[in-house]
Image 1 (cartoon, each protein chain N blue to C red):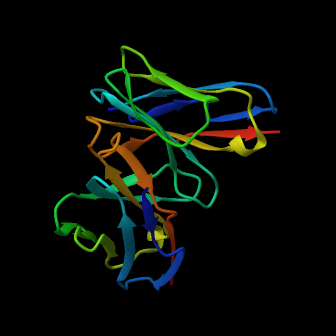
Image 2: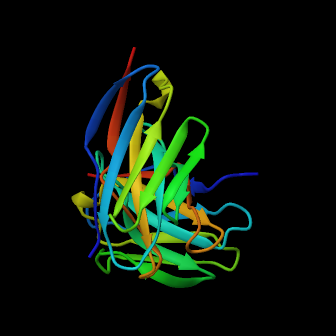
Length: 110
Length: 112
């Protein structure tokens, strides 16, 4: 089966840096996605990692280690609008289905 | 370009009824996936369709069915509705089955 773990909640201060971790156990790993979801809205795509290493996109970076079954999303220069849930999702070749973790609710405080 | 569009936005049904939810993918996207999201949890995979064929099915009962049309739009059908089916139903489309998925705003289904 597939299992994805991420912290339920995190709190950080405006302007700071926060790292949201995600660990997974899955067969037929084909890539890992990070999505942002504001309350009452649909998830929006942030990043996609297939190979090991760091992918940087503006204030957001995502890291993947396939051997460790581990990823993190790094958010820099936090803004109040970054308060949202961050979803880690793994795609595996068994039907190419996307399995989501429970999401990490990030609260950014002034 | 328009994003993924879903209809209706909200729906209220009673136990035992059936419901049809609709999804239009981003133009050029041939893969459509359906997810159920209960409040406070991550989305749960229901179905994936690519080129009008079912490519994946999650752990949902046979009351849930779906199809994809020649124009790549899709319908999700749920029969014999239960209170536990109350959730946000999300549709996502992608260029291919293993490419980043882009989500619609969802249909919020409430069962009374």
